[in-house]
Image 1 (cartoon, rainbow, N blue to C red):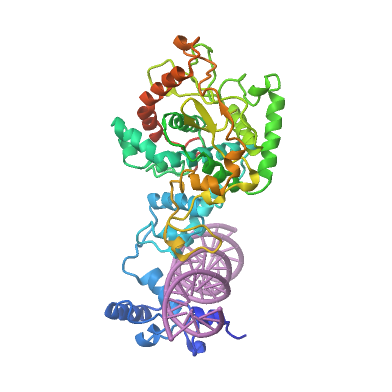
Image 2: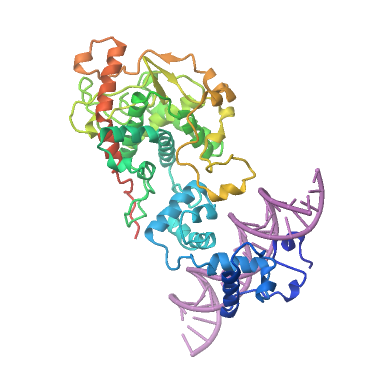
Length: 467
DNA sequence: AAGAGCTACAACCGCGAGCCA
DNA sequence: CTGGCTCGCGGTTGTAGCTCT
């Protein structure tokens, strides 16, 4: 069988291919190769010409691979450290099998080495943990797990677009050194860059996601800019690529409605009698925030996603739960998942999301830095990691490019953000929206730094122990 | 002790992008 | 524009060494 043109072009063969040695390199061959490169450096020869010049009976490609994967002086030898393992897993979750991109973030490690390590160690490790090494989601995930993960992805993505604001908030408060150290996203990542030796605890924590969500709500309220909510949805929905995700959501939504059909329509989807998702009211007039169970979180999420996915305006405005304590966790704000995520504008909330299934802008997904997303990946893509921060907040241009985004709902505004079911005692009979807004915003801003600090210190790993 | 099976990793291979004549 | 060449990437294969029976 003759050699293929591409093989010839790629350097594995030359005109004397039948004489070219293959297989393991001998120490003598290594020595010749190293000696030649040391003497002449790079640039004055091509890999194809090198074997002849160096006196090697190898093809140029074999020489290049031997050098880049084994003989290069800056290659680190030995086992991968725990930190390196975590980095690989984190990056793989972001970029997939882009071994060169991953390798660029692990000094001294080659793409080939990382690829082998992944295939022989990490993949199995994740599988043993019940994590799908391709999707980085639980293999045997229940519907609830999937939705919870969906929720996690969404919040994480939206938060990523807010990272600069969070950092700004923390630095201005002077109390959030950990965030000032710019590791927000790592801290938000359950696979994060902690030095915890047990990498295998990857389950999602209801309470921690709850905290994240509330941080998000606070940011939305305290921010003067619009967070990239649309991108968040665009990011997460395609990741559940099959159409089944929509069917699933519909199914779950129907089920939830059936389960809670005793409630008024605008409260359907909530598992605790209409309390804001995540927090069960102990007393409507005091509204002490408490974490609720997973099912109510999921129900609310399903409802929110369903509403968004069906181009329906929210039937109730977001609901905030005032806190009564002086600590941090008990001041977390409840959030009515009946309403989609919203951006804060003075006196009203404009829904900010792409509600058109057929016009999701996938370009908002995590991108490889500095390059456009396309099927034909530019070479530079291999050299850079995706931006942890989403590509951009929705810009006027992007809205213009996708006119359906807000057309459906741009006229839909809601009277107040703060129709809390549990109004603060001193505002119970207060109808002044602006006053209410100001009241809550003050509370939010006051606690912002502490909350961010608290979240930054959360350990997202629990529930699963690995031998 | 020996062979079968498994594991880890180096090396091979095909493909595609970029460059250049 | 086209074709040849180089280089880099990701997937796959081959094999040495280890473990198990």
